[in-house]
Length: 331
Length: 273
Image (cartoon, rainbow over all chains, first blue to last red; front, side):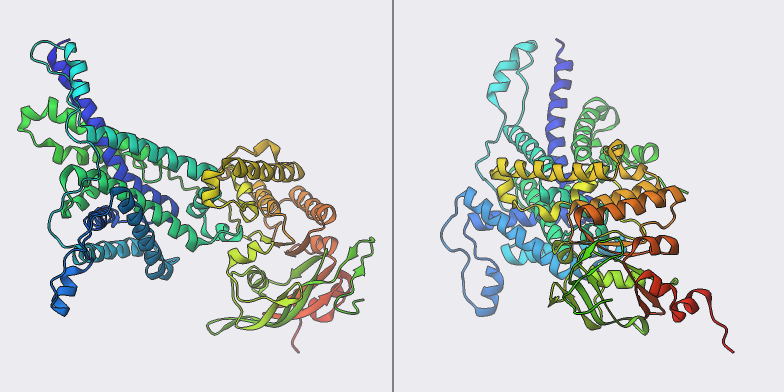
């Protein structure tokens, strides 16, 4: 096989892996949008906040340490212990559920029946609040996150694929973190689909997404479902936060992955879980292949804008996305 | 005709009507300065078909919304099964066994007919999230039992042919029927119908009337309904409350109400001279 072709395959595989991570972020948006019609601008910050909290708990940091020190004049920074990753993840899930309850009580409850744009604005406010709150709670320095996910290229895959090409080809380079992320994302999505199709709460979630008044009349508590949905979105944010945080450190730029989710959503549709996955994969593969094939001709750095151009093209042809609900007005 | 509050009565066609199930005591509902319901009291007895009629804007739907918890009255009490009901949210009322339909149809448009009717069973499902995840067997058994009830309702309302159809594709008359099916799936003690026959043609109205009578007859479900079609109301109901401008102007059997001068005036108009 010609090496050039093999490289294209490698690029495609890596694109798929990157796409899974995009999809993971997009999933959090879809969940909330489907069940409450809210575009949650804060989803990216959710991922950052979850990752910050996870690192903080693992390293035994004292929350609000800087604030406490500044007020009382103490010099505390850590409890001096470290918490195993598994325990810290469970505790962080607890924090995200708590966050969902607070959001429902302080924000959503007061904005029932308001136009969508008001709720959208509220999530922008939430994003900025949470960004500052996260810094205040855990500090703003860049942190490394290591929950024990293997990193670096997989030698096994490299050794066993080297024979495909000639002397200049050393086998496919695929990061083990990406492989792990793909497996976890697949499990997460399967779990979510099963949950929404086959459980009582899943059915109630779909009902609330469809019609609030009808949902109330069949005995569904809107508040409970909102807390549930925002908790799940918080959990998905945590998973995304762990994956991206392990890859490139926990810092503010983590929240910008939300921007990568936008074109994914336009492509896949705001209301479709499979759409988020397929959209993520298309964007991932598309931007990597474009960079590989066309990039050198036009000076590179195409990954920054390719996704948005692709999404724009889609908006023209298919505004509801690949899998989104078609908008038909009966006249 | 009615003696004690707990004693029932027997209808002309020989059906036994039980004691008071729900009692509205001096209900007043205001929206800002507008009084939608003004000091109204009436009761609904076990097993009866109770109609609420009146001209447009009389406050009938508001009354139904008070019963189902969508509106909270400023004054008055709602008694259910012999005890005053605390302020409740609509979903809590539904969990008490009170199901309803809406004047403007509130179905889950994106779901199939079957899924819509299944949501009616939500109040009957007890397995929690953890139980459903860990104890798959029990959740499945529950699902099967619920499915059986739903299939029975589907047969009963003769909508087998459209069970897999997305609701958004159905014509108006069938949507009304699916909404009734969803309410019935909850196996309610009290069924509230807000204009179940509005906008239907004669044939559809006859079907719907038959279903309402059959539900009452076969399952013993107590029904409170709002309807504009006088002929239908007089044929279906055991007792009728008449409202006008938020006030109660008549209460009794269809015959009593028909001969009530105030009711005649409200419907036909009266000359003020």
